[in-house]
Length: 97
Image 1 (tube, rainbow, N blue to C red):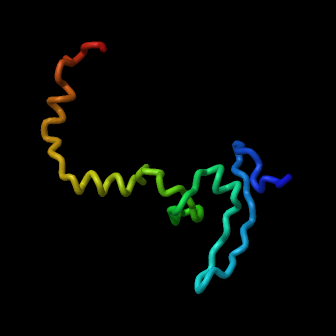
Image 2: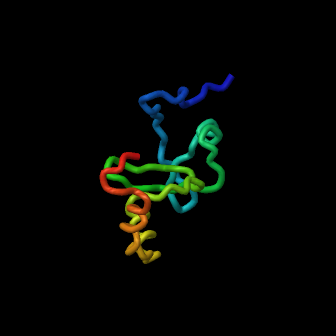
């Protein structure tokens, strides 16, 4: 019986130590099959550098960071000039909803 290198998910994330190994002309880490299966990792991962360390996540995770969200919103150059009228439409001051 093979032992799962990561215990079942808990409030505190499980940690395992991975060795950095030579892979061709590069160096990398090998992820255990149980980790690949549990997190449905297929062909690629996204590596994010964060203040608290590096984060690996599945590529299919389509959530944007706040910075990416800001850039996307700015790139679209939407016209929000009618927002006040839209927000106030049908709601009178003092009216409870």
